[in-house]
Image (cartoon, rainbow, N blue to C red; front, side):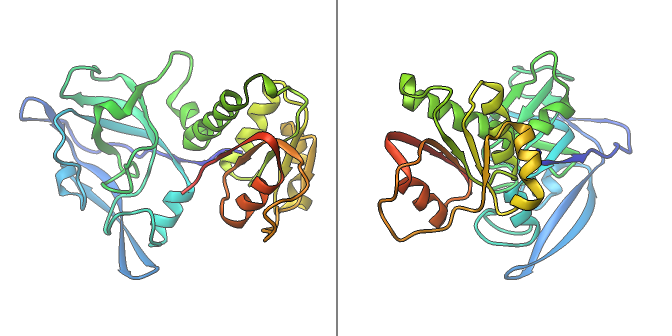
Length: 279
């Protein structure tokens, strides 16, 4: 249902004090290179400092070092791992757009050593080295302290996909306001993906009863999507050249884009809303 979890590996050496603020210890990271367009190579490297990685973060005053415990495999990560263009600013790079873990150091003092935090979004694993590493250095302002009652593993079961799904639902509810009732039809595209499946589950948990889940995997996923809360499961929404179609849905949550999004817009009821997300 959610993004695939990547388990941390263990630290191998003793901690060393460095510059009174940054703690350095030997750790491993996955480095992706792009020998040629659309071709990738992967290497597990062991370093003693993030500065030894290909694209360390620099130019920021308030930085935190996070000991990564869990990360997920997102669509963006898949593109970077395959050496595809459009996500990583350049190669080589350490991928991984999200993680959870414990603070090792924080230059501003906002967090204390051992505080559990979550990183989602922003530019980790895209414009600089990301979370497929035993340690990651990020701006402190990008980190959120983990609420009590949820573990680092559980936070990454939710991950960026779950966070995005909830944001999409909140945006839809905020836009439609009282016009949106629990019985109104809501379409969720890419329903077997991380964002889509999570959106279906959250909508059902919030009491929405007319959820239409769209997927290209109806035969293998229909029963599962209904168990999550979908009332109806339909095939992939086909791109259409028609600017206007029969109005079907008051709300749409789309994580696919392109021609499918165009069709969704043409099938949205007058005064309705579409929350779209993706690369």
